[in-house]
Length: 443
Image: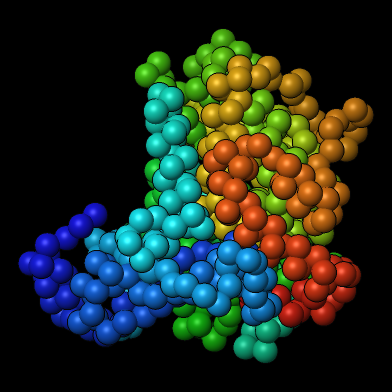
């Protein structure tokens, strides 16, 4: 959105009155890491109209701080990161933040902009008569100042005591989320040692992806006030519980919701059946988007509630696609949850891939595979997800859904970053890999 001089002056005055001295804007690279630029508040107009400069190779920064240069993404050239002042949130004393986008110097969206790729996918979905809402669940691990576990006592999964022992942190988190307009559906200590889970309110797809980054910011800054750090690694500690970043999707047409009110299994409409079929059909080629890091494969295993089985089922937490029942027990109606996503994913690309694969299924009229109503480990004949990071990336390179909805430049950039990880970390199970990357995705 373009703002007038008077609008921008009013924003600066309002922010200054709130004590804001720095304004930041961030983009998320192919490795899922948020990268930011900051300016004094008085320069807000320039941040909005011109954008702050960034090298094209920002898109291929790697999780360990190195750069996976490509012929197109190297030391030559310049991009701009503009922000919309209306999206600014005060995330720290004296600091406001807004999501940014990557533009070329002429002001057009750059081919490597993940947020723009999601915008295009939303536009394609809406042109097909579909309106989407997306909600994210974020899991993370609290760390002490030394990077180890925040506590050393016996863990109690979902324990009442465990959450009450972190009550000061959790109540501060709820207040901080409210201050920045971040909708929290629930929050609690989860299954793993010092693991926290929050569920974000459903929103339009772009806002939902923005909220993932905002939530990471709020979690990180709140933890810092309590002498802790936060890890969004898929596997902070080798051999322990990993972190997910599940995505919930609901779709509505002019005839109503597609995942409820129909005559199909559990109330699915024909469009809902085809959408689930499309998500499953495209999933092997999109694991590189959803869970493509060097640490992702260790989490994406049976028994981890990570959706490692390529199937769907009503309220089945081991299935890749869980159908969440509608009715009085569901605050937001029937929806589907994609469980394979982890926090190393670029949330804009993950949401775009999910939307695009659902649309693919609807356009092609794909038939719904048989439901797996029980634990998939006892089911024979299920198709498989790619085994390991290298195989996931090969499948991603061949995915027509990825190329259609993300674009060839983003596919090439993501492959460059993740294949760098394959070469740099030949033994993903080594404890030193988890330790080295424990804070790579933290904000």
